[in-house]
Image 1 (cartoon, rainbow, N blue to C red):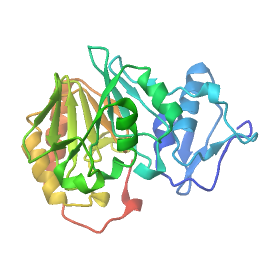
Image 2 (image 1 turned 60 degrees about the vertical axis):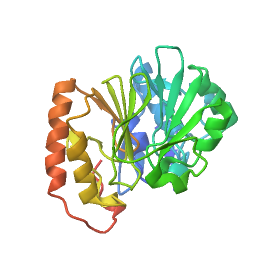
Image 3 (image 1 turned 45 degrees about the horizontal axis):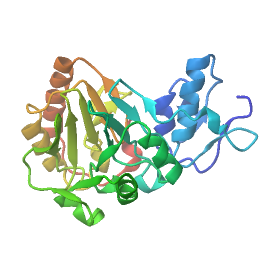
Image 4 (image 1 turned 180 degrees about the horizontal axis):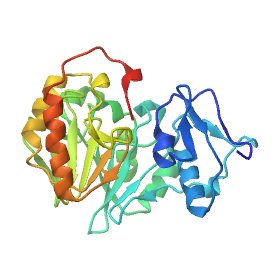
Length: 289
């Protein structure tokens, strides 16, 4: 496709395919460019895939993509932007900016660190808090929090991954972060996994659950549940009826929006399916995005 290719650093993380699944596909265990963008909208999605890729593996023949075509941070809705520039140090996880009515913002999990990117993100509003969903996504939290003058949050179960956090979520009860924003401890993927809920609209689920393109439904990544699949089932059972949202916004896996009533039904069904799962060895190859 006009000289574009995916180099051998690709880790098959699915990030690029989330942005442009019709333009970039999975072929023999790695991403591959399928076809050229056909219009301006497709070009924007293609370049989102390019600039989100944590290994910078999607390359033009010239060697470098045009930085003027970097769309990040990119609006998903009027209240949430996705940061892009996913980091290898967070296993390529997605991160988000949650915009608040006061004109401020919160960062949920972290993109690749650079001062230039931090300035770009803060242009969306003064960032007051950096909310970590769990240990795997903590790598750049302190750098971003210090740059923004923001509070860094993590659950006590994963505190060793961010021992200098400013705010520590403790126990299993929901914790108010700010007006309209609540942390719901959700141990399972890790001991300190947290779900952040905003405005009964946005659910930042970390790696606890995600939207699967393959299943066209909510799913848990049980093959990479590091702490306990039984604990995850218990967490979902405890939490499913306490949360209401339209958007599921995970660290890994697809984002998706549904009416809140349908999303609630799907979350309850996911809870029931998860209760039937049993522990198994970690296997990254078993994930069906």
